[in-house]
Length: 382
Image (tube, rainbow, N blue to C red):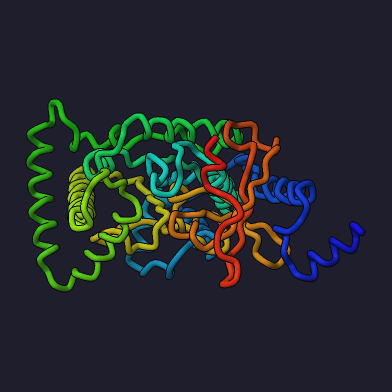
């Protein structure tokens, strides 16, 4: 009977119909497969000048492989901007430091909790896999530092500091639990480095910078050519910003428009400050495809887990997707995706020794004749 069930499941290529124990076994197998272990840095003598260029280009070309990159390859001009800091790291024989832009909280429209979950687990493992790939061609490999963008959410979205602290602390704890300290520097917050946007001794400078940014953004918004991008950014605000209770539909639309405007002003000020105080070793990576900001960002655009997904880890709940071909793949269940997937929670897991990792959801697409979901996202909030 068991072999008949197995044959039937594999014939239909659906794992989500397996009995609990069998599915739990497949889930644990998938989790262990994605708990990537970092390759240790090998002894490496700084190369001579004649090899620096070759090694730097080889390392960058490896970093830009499709497994980790979303979108087209950078233009020659942007490629050279990426190459400049990599040359400096290679000349010193040090790991290539990559700043990874990270949100300071989970999307409150998608999950009812504020902590790292399986989405962050899969994303961190994917970054380690990136290090391992580069380490094969450049022995020191990569070194990451997460930069939590708390400043923008404080200024643009008036986010709750306690909620942000809970999430940021949980991500730092997860790095330690997974044993990734060798490739991750301690994370930091944007408020710790964007001193030009803080109150205190620099209040006047901050005021002037924000006023200039406000004027630049207003001019950008008045350009008819930017109408499509303004609407696109308003839609992003609609997905991400928590609306105060009791607002009318018209008031909500104004709220979203104003939130996206504040976001543009904050980023304009940050970009101006970065140009005034440049970091020559800055190599920025973002879980974006380049369409989310009002001005292009010079950054490596990353896939979030694998299979070309670019969903930001904090945009939803980390789950495993039954791909219909006998495999469970990492997936981020955002608020928009929740309506289109069935969900089955598997608990009793003991693979990752961290709070909240005792259970995970397996999801699969709905069909027209199967409305509704087999579970609820709140099931994972305990």
